[in-house]
Amino acid sequence: MAILSEIVRNILVIVLIASFLELMLPEGTLRPLVRFAIGLFILIAIMSPLVGVLFSDRNINIEWWNLHIDPGQEAQIMEQGEKINQQIWQSPQEVVSDKVAGQIGAVALLVPGVEEVEAQVVLNEAGVVESLQLVVKPQVNSRGEEASQVGLFGESEATLSPEEQEMIRSKLSTIIKNLYGFDNTLIQIEFQGG
Image 1 (cartoon, helix red, strand yellow):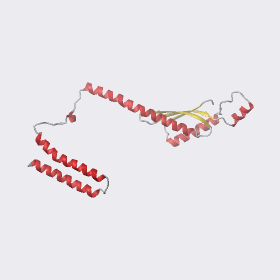
Image 2 (image 1 turned 135 degrees about the vertical axis):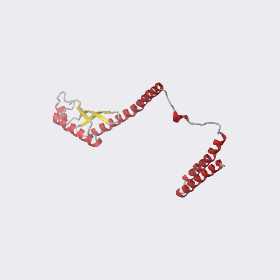
Image 3 (image 1 turned 90 degrees about the vertical axis):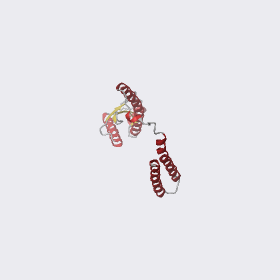
Image 4 (image 1 turned 60 degrees about the horizontal axis):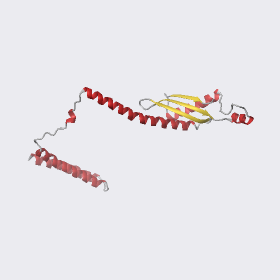
């Protein structure tokens, strides 16, 4: 009799919840799914007490709650977990580093006086940009074009005065810091051929 009252009580609770859900849900594609789920709950409500009576002589316990591992095996499991974690972490970090370096290089090309940029980004363990190194190849300016017309040797590469380098360096660092929020990030800018 106790089993029958438990089944009836569970079914009544499920029917009350089902009727409430039927009132709340609009007509649509979700209603059949809800009816299916409620049907499964009714089956569970009926079968659970019956299985308890039919298999009362068996002790069905889930032992995962009380799982005990010896310390030697635990250290080995932790070591393997750390290796897997390092592999998982390393690959996305390299991808993020390459993507950020590409973005920063593309933004740096927009600065007047910059022809090519190679960017290297170093991330810390948390994935935050720790340092940024830019190798800038300056554009050939009007002085270089005039020099090539005259035929001077050694003027094939663009050379910038220290003032021009400092101006480009200042523009690059300001743009990168403002765009990416790198206030505490070390930004190194070197000039190639200048």
